[in-house]
Amino acid sequence: MTKTRSLVLGLFLLTAACSSGQSTGTGQPTGRDLTTVLFLGDSVAAGEALPLAAAFEASGVEFSSIASDGGGNVVGPFSEENWKKLPEQIAAAEPSVVVYQLTTYDWGTEQEQRAGYDRLLATVTEAGAKLVFVTSPPIRPDDFYRPHMADLERAPDVARAVATGSGGKANLLDADAVWGGTYQRDRDGKVDRSADGIHTCPQGAARFANWLLTELAKLFSGITPAEPRSWANAGWSADAHFKGC
Image (cartoon, rainbow, N blue to C red; front, side, top):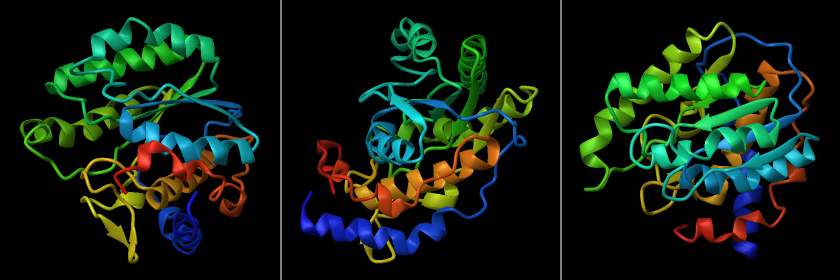
């Protein structure tokens, strides 16, 4: 990790309070212990998984990620290929909680999105785990994503409806508390998001990790989020996922 990037992560600590405030979500504290977390999503989530792994380890919680570059979604393109392996992957991880960050590929009609999220809920429940949907960072759409923005903007409401109707088996966390409602390259004078308009940079990923741990601690017992100083500068920021920063 370069000295510059280390300083960026150090400055993240000054803004962490901004990302750990109230969020809009569904559900109430479950009383369930958070012992093992499985993280699902696309390449955006794959980058965020790097600080999450360090943060969960520092917090005494087992963490694994099957977030996938170019896929990882449960509805839309590539999802049927993902579903061929996803139930086995979830069961093998033996998670207490599965976190699915909505992806940039969650395209489809409202009915198709609902079917995909319901299918994920049923699969996670069968594995004996709780499901947490997390909204994705807002993107700056290019020609590839622009035709699908209506679908992506609808997805959080569909996931929220699934969580609300789950009888306590699922929750939704709205990550606008971290990212705001629109793509922002910089935050507090520091680079937060990749120049590609899609992915996150180390400071943004670290703020997200701190926020997610804090929110999960409100829903589940058995976790005390570690101080960011114990994991923010652990070397993960040099990963190639942040090359656009």
